[in-house]
Length: 140
Image (cartoon, rainbow, N blue to C red; front, side):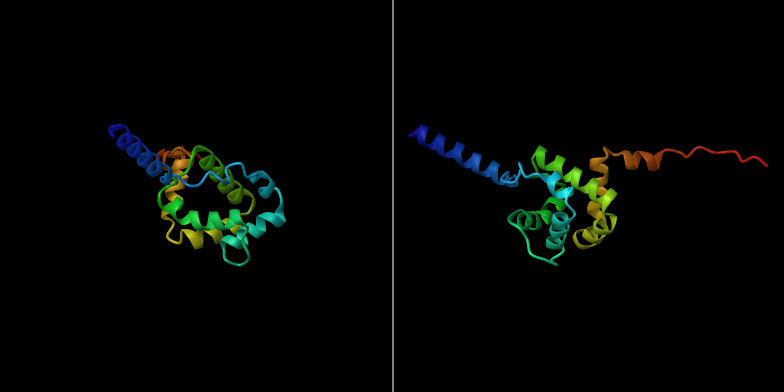
């Protein structure tokens, strides 16, 4: 009897632990294929902006994104965090207009952007702001 109770408890803990993470179903999704294909990337952005239809992956992302932002990706596994960083950097560098549109929709107040920048840069942005700027003497 004790063994049955123990197995039930272990099962419940395992189920609860699994619910604390996002699905890993799309972890092998080829994000580079999307980022390097203008048409496909544009379709994903339209999905997120509710301007077009969504693939299964797009629907899952749109459903997960608000919670991932508010929880600072605490339910993300390492692969998901890595891919998130890659996509964010790509959008910031290569598609800044779309990045701004997405941040206005999903982070209108800018609170998540500041947290993510600090997290992804290892606090480099904050350290940069805190360091005194060198004084350059002008020649006259």
